[in-house]
Length: 168
Image 1 (tube, rainbow, N blue to C red):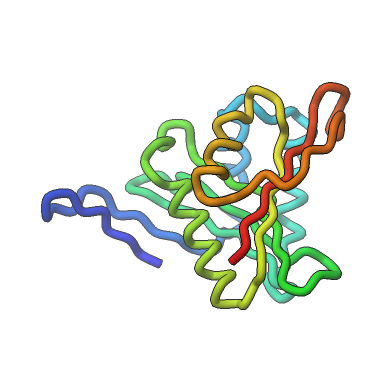
Image 2 (tube, rainbow, N blue to C red):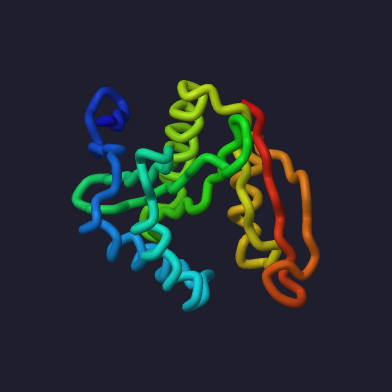
């Protein structure tokens, strides 16, 4: 999907959504590392998560490119096992230098449109309740996701899991 951002009739920056390729993975991990909110174990798991994505099983790993940035953001989503139409967004991240430009909203909108076309019923997103993730939680709420569960001490003592859901 090729997107031209226009402002006052002039093309400002060209952006594109496309499936991720293995040569994107390092930039995607670097993008997450630059946020300073993920620990080493989470960053290490990213490469495993990317390599395990299986498009034939429904997994999607989509990159957003903007201007000269090879990866300005990405989203990974997959069908929830043993469900009828439930999906998880496992990762969504935007480069620190590109935050606030609507890339995260574009990635979520892309995934939602794709999943509606696939007749998905709902999307689930899990994240931490730590203060570092306040912006992410507010982002999900602002896009119509509802906080449906909070599991105390899930990730570690004092680090609750928040589960958000949006019906499609």
